[in-house]
Picture: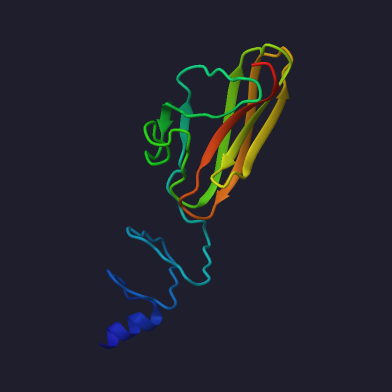
Length: 175
């Protein structure tokens, strides 16, 4: 009993438990947590905790899209080149959405190749969140221009359930 008491008081006892609540915990050596660590109070980490790889997906359209004058289209991505978490994007259910599976900072990037319009036009490419907030936006006048229009932005999702979508608009002019 004395050896156990000395180990607990001096921090030399091995600690292993499957269901413990600890008021104060200091880990001075390396540690591995195989389950979930929940921290409800203030914490200090001398080294940033190692996180799993970030979520990512490369999605794209299968075919071209014709747009009328002053039309808007939320792009539905029917194909994907790669994806790190299958819950991030589905080609069958809500293919227009990219849905983060954990809170955190997410980078969204998109580009659209457009053909020359029939008449003067202005195109707009936007990335919107699930509340229609703008993550990124880019307007391009396009009298006879052909080329890429790009947009990129960062969004912090503080709760699970939000998503991002890409909207391409022909603001005015030809189709």
